Image (cartoon, rainbow, N blue to C red; front, top):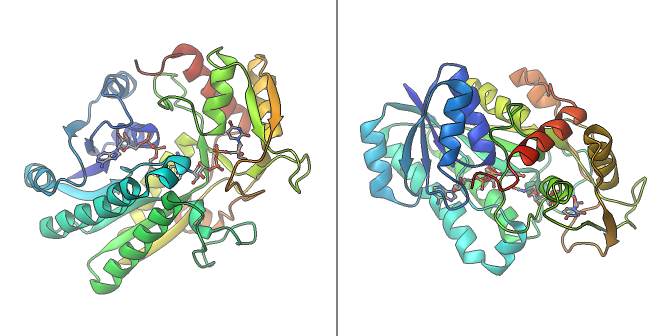
Length: 336
Ligand code: NAD
Ligand code: WQD
C-alpha cells in the first residue's frame, strides 16, 4: 500500500516525502509543479536512495485522479497541494477558492470512488481568526479570517468535518501549522519561493546571500516586548514528522484536529538576531510600516499533539537558522 502526497514537490511536501520514504512507505506524489520544480525528486533520491512515483497533474482533474487511484494501491492521502500566498489571495480570490476549495472537493470525490477514506489536510493557524486569544488551542472555534487564503483553509476544514459526519468510514486529520522554516540538514532540499518572498525566513536568507539589499521589518510599534510581531516558528522536519505521526490517528474515524507548533513565540527581531548569531552573516534591516492583516502575536498550545500523537519538536532555533542558511547558501538560485 502507498501514501498519495498531493503537492509533494513543494516545500513541506518534499520534506515529508523524505521522511515517508525513510520510514519505509511507498509514496506517490501528485503535483502540477505550479510552485515547485521536478529537480526536487533528484534531491530526494540523493538523500534517501529512493524515488517516489511522480504523477504530474492537478488535483482538480478528476480523470487524472481516477487513473492515479486505478494505477496505485493508495491507502491514505496527505494533501498539501494548494496556493498559499496571502496577499495574492486577496487579489485573485477565485483562483484561491478554485484551487484550494474546489480542488479539495474533487480530490475527496475521487477518494470516495476509490474507497480511500483516510486524509491528512494541511490547515493553518490562520483559521483561528483575528480575535482569538493566545496561545491557540484546538478547542477554540474557527474565527473570522482576514483573507481568502485563510478562508479557503477554514472552508476545507468545514467540508472535511461534514464529510466525516456523513460517513463514519472517513477519518481526517486537520493539521494546523504555525510557521514552518528551515530545511533538510543535507542542504539539498528547502524552500524555493518564486519572485520576492512573502515570508520572513526566505527574505532574511535572501538578504544574507546578497539577493536582496535589506529586510523591511513590518512594524515595530506592536504591543510586544520589542515592538515587532511574534510567531511560533517550527522546523520543517518537525512539521513533516507530525504528518507521519498523524497517519496513525487515522485508524480512528472522524476528524482529528492538531496544532503543530513549538508552543513558543519569537519576535521578528529575535529571529533576525538569531540568524546573525548562528551564521555570522549580517542582515541589514530597516523598520517599515505594519503589513496589512498581520496579527501582533500568536503561538500554539501544542499539548494535544504532544499527548495524543506523541509528537514533540526536536529541532532548536539554532538548528532552524543553520539549516535555512545551509540550504540558501548552497542553492542561491533554489532548484534552478
Ligand atoms: P508549496 O507551494 O511549496 O507546495 C504546494 C505544492 O502544491 C507545490 O508543489 C505546487 O506546485 C502544488 N500545487 C498547487 N496547486 C496544485 C494543484 N491544483 N494540483 C496539484 N499540485 C498543486 O507550499 P508549502 O509551503 O509546502 O505548503 C503546503 C501546504 O501547507 C499548502 O496547502 C499550504 O497552504 C499549507 N500551509 C503552509 C504554511 C507555510 O507557512 N508554508 C503554513 C500553513 C499551511
Ligand atoms: C512572519 C512575521 C511579518 C516578511 C503567513 C500566513 C500564514 C502561513 C504562514 C501559510 C510577520 C514579518 C515578514 C518580511 C517582516 N501561511 N515579516 N518582513 O504572516 O505569520 O504567516 O505564513 O500557509 O497563513 O499568514 O508569516 O513569514 O509572512 O511573517 O517583518 O519581509 O515576519 O510582519 O510578523 P505569517 P510571515
